[in-house]
Image (cartoon, rainbow, N blue to C red):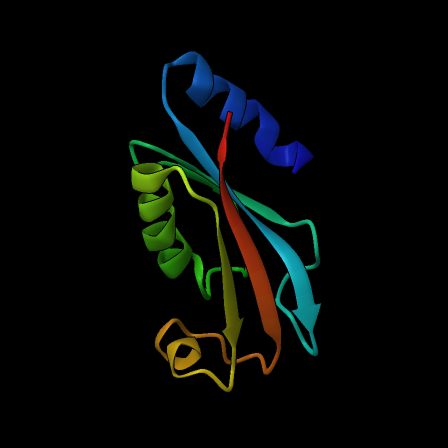
Length: 103
């Protein structure tokens, strides 16, 4: 999270709303460890990573819903899920990602 804080602060200073997605659980061979974060600005800028590129596009889409509703979401990705193949999580692991607005 520390590495994305300067970017979040800059976006907030520019008046943008920000959503942060954080890996909160991993199982088996996960691409990123717990605590890894991805920040998304209201204008679509991104900083950080939750999976090394495997699920970021789906997290981005879910972040848009969080911007609209203000409600946080818990997302789960795993190789056994049909969605996992479509968002390219072929590592065999599973990750849970918590997506929340930054106040």
